[in-house]
Image (cartoon, rainbow over the protein chains, first blue to last red):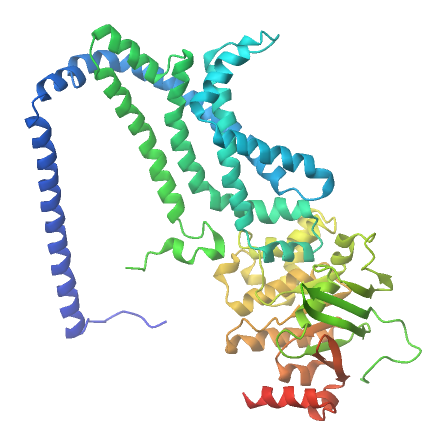
Length: 292
Length: 254
């Protein structure tokens, strides 16, 4: 390595740098101008529409927003708790399903068939239907010990549906680990299970975390669907407040809160996906900092 | 050193008899037989697709043979009742593309098998791994991840990982083919050192210089069989078979 001490860019290089700076300034100005123009058109179009005053008073009333906020926030806290507990359960169930689907050997055929059937059914069923069937069907059986709480039943429906999706993410991650890794592990004398546990899963895990966080974002919104079973979450709370004030602003408040909840999750996903070294030696392009 | 099986000596460490292996309609090994005695280095040469890699993978039970037997230390390992994991624990394998575990540090790559397969404690596995890294000259890289090493260093780690379980037999599958030319030397020197230590090796390679200087015996594979075998001087210096002559002529003409 030679030292850069005392290095002065050549005239050619200085000319290049000046050109790039000029280009950079121009790009910034163009971006600014076009953003302002688009925003102006959108705002003017909205404000100029004939129904705007009516919409503003019934959807964007600051008084109603202030009054509804604590109640909707309390509902959102339920969403957050449901989401957190469900996320953990989903990861456990989905990983079990994925491992069942990749299991080998004739004795394990029932496991494989069960997992495949489960994923087929619950990926195909609309979440709303699962919620209704579980929420109203399970208590209808009047079995001893079956919970009747809307939160528990709604959470169960979320876990049932999301596990099917997340299991497929895990399976894709497991299958993305190159067979040569398994060959190397087996050549050392590791059993099939040891190779899975110590070589395949740790590498698969790093690859599936970004798509998993994406599913977590989707879950955070879908946790609002448990409101149809009567659980008072942010959506339900907003509905109640809307009825109380005869004004739709609480819905907007709930919407803003959901967005604020998911933005940090999305950013974490981006950061993880870009972190160099996260994928090991295959991450050549994941860092990508030097690429223009 | 003399070539060929020593009459009246101990049975061979590895005995391959009439092994057949086909992938679909493509017959790769067609009744191949080969003996390897302890402490000897046997080099397999031959065109790409001549079955060198397939033979090594069959010996390590990574591929199932279609017919014939493979005996390691006197046991027929192609018997389906044999515990393949126990057999593999006695055989070290090094791959063309290193196949290090990218999520584990160099030390943990080497320490994994002692801990999981050979029942060593965590500390014991660490010590053995470190000693083996010392042996290949990479103790200073123990804390690094594989992608922080050069290709030659990665391959030396892979050799350490295969050696740490004290295998009876080492299989090396074109271990320098993926390396930049200036990195080939450090790996071949290490293999020459291992020969001095008495490690039994079967080496598939295109490095004729290595074959000439390190091999006890050279086998030219063609059409799924050992077409010609002998000392490096015989096979490389004075080949008898037209196919061998043609292969070597094309090889040196490059």
